[in-house]
Image (cartoon, rainbow, N blue to C red):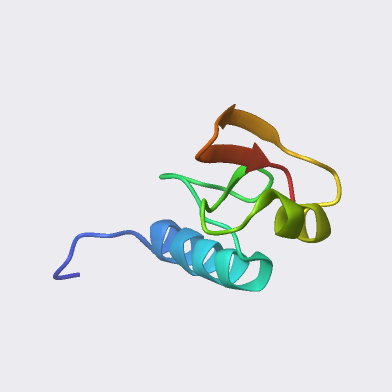
Length: 68
């Protein structure tokens, strides 16, 4: 009650943290299950091929998004 967050937001944050940890990805603001995730720049394209076999959308060399 002291921080002014609702329960749905707390669950969304927990889901995002668990997803990011399990899949080695970053998640944009207001991410929900089923939305695109971000492949961190620290993961090379070669490593990303193994982690994300369905491919990705390269918006910029440092910004790649994909579905899980």
